[in-house]
Amino acid sequence: MHSRHFLLGLPACLGIACSSGAGTEHSGFSSATLSTSGYTSPASTGLTEADTSSSGSTSGGTHVGTDGGTAAEPAPTTDGASTTTGNLSGAFRTSDSTTSGGVPTTTQDGPATTDPGPDATTTGTSGTSGTSGTSGDGTTGGQGKPVPDNATDENLLVALIGDQGTGSDTKAVYELLLSEKADFVIILGDFDYGDDPDAWADEMDSVLGDSFPVFGVIGNHDTDAWSGYQDKLKARLAKIAGASCEGDLGVKSNCTYRGLHFVLSGLGTKGSDGDHEKHIAQVLAADDHLWSICTFHKNQRDLQAGDKPDDLTWKALQSCQNDGSIIAMGHEHSYARTRTLTDVGNKGAAHGATGMAELLEVGPGRTFSVVSGLGGKSIRDWDSGLHGNENWWGSVYTKNTG
Image 1 (cartoon, rainbow, N blue to C red):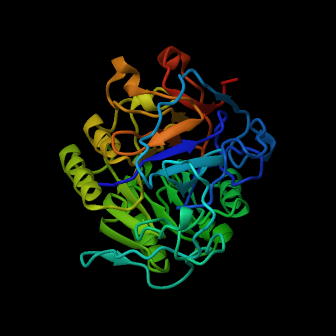
Image 2 (tube, rainbow, N blue to C red):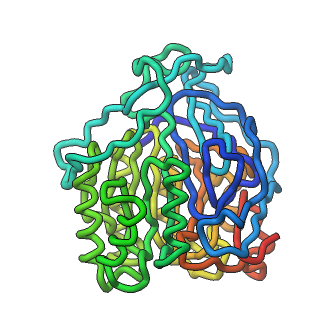
């Protein structure tokens, strides 16, 4: 269980691309910047509407931000709580603060050290470990407090992409990862749609190189050749210094890298629902990193912009909410992010949606979900017949929204 509480201050027009200050959105991937210090006030940098001309995915989509929420409920004001603000499109930073609301003056430098535990089954031993982040003495966080051992690296930038395909659009998304200086990527399933692990890996290597940190979760279009895809992911993992993964990689596994904990779950794609529900609950309860993400390929109809059915289970997602872990999914070829959710699975109560579109609260019992399915394959429409009356959305990017 994660003993922390964050406020995530995001621009209302959070969209497909995440940048730490470029001032432009792109329709290729979602990402998050996570750290333990280095406060940036909300909306402190420039922001433009979605720029589809610089998109890394299929063009033609427009972006809509919805802010139908009320003022955000305040986060707990316990001493030493973490407050998080973001400067652009899903890039968010955390900062240590006190009840007085002071601004941190000292930042962390270098990676946080974590113990993966004796039962880790796969561990990276060589290769890149990413950038070190903002300079500082590496010993204190905001207000001169020690940086927690379970913190992420300073300003860690994580890209989340799903539903890739192959060709120029997919390569453009890879280029976007590099241009935005993402530290690593989690691929949310459906790799090349061709059951060809060698071709998928070769195309990725041609842009990212063979040692860029990549993690992935199984998608429904990956099942027939999964052993080959999994072998490629394992080979890549072995080159990622400091990465540790336990379990059946990409199917029923959890990893830590640079202080971030994430679950890679094949729920709805491979394996029984009950086994996945149990696994998710157990690994989240056993972990205490400040930041954690539950990742899936499949999704729930209420949490995406199209007409996909319920393929996950609310019980599994409730475990993520209870833990305060962010929920990231693919499968639907569009982008859709909710507001803060406090009652996932209760549609009659709008899944407990609260607060403003651009201000998210993450902590035990509070989370948000995002579908990031614009990895290059295609971009689909918003289904207004299914979703037109829903009021839990924070930001949506599809082919037909405006």
